[in-house]
Length: 322
Image (cartoon, rainbow, N blue to C red; front, side):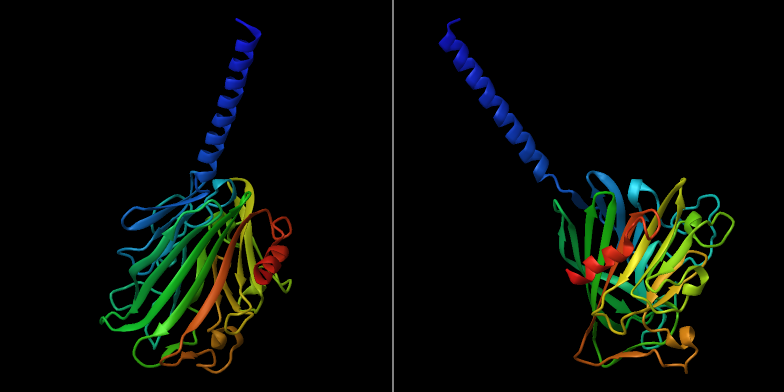
């Protein structure tokens, strides 16, 4: 083989290698970091090919996320009533993993389950989008009484954003009255909520968790207090993980009150002033006038460690300043 022939082969090999690298990188970059797959009654949401959560939207009292896998793919929400596992309390069957609803909408209970309760019903998806940096679910839902009366239309936007080992789940929803005024009533039974894994709870036979809010209040004293954010953390399979909920400063009545319990219920509720502050019944009513609408925004931040290791305050500041 001549020197010229060898040079041509070497040049061709180098070109082939570069083309291969390009194709590999193109294929890698086109793969969505967040991929959302419609399974008919639920959306399966994967991050880099691994399950993060499923969004159950059909044939349920209200849409909810289950399971929810945080850093290290650790299960951060209770399994019951979707699944029976040892050492889990079988209370409050309406506490289905991660959800939004409220206990009094024109007097109708959408918080609890039952034949005489209100239901939040999937209407249509405006968009379901995977992406290299985030996933998006844009959904229309309807708030319907047991008798079939439509009280509210809701425009719901959900965003899933992974960053390193952390995960962010953003909720943005706009509530629109259908026929006359709608009153979101004064009750502690609500509203933007998650039911945590048994080992993360503050108390209980396996609970070893802790609670802290942005004002420095801790554990059982956090119930009914106002704060910009609240964080609930504890061990799962021997590793400490936590979830913080951020109350957006544009929300009505910011900073919100926290319906956060020692048994693992963790909810932001801007309506339950009567229960939280022992003020007259109805103090917390929020009326959405006919022809108007109200929007709420929250972020769930799933992180490693306690609130300090997870840098919750810093993450909250980034959320509100973006």
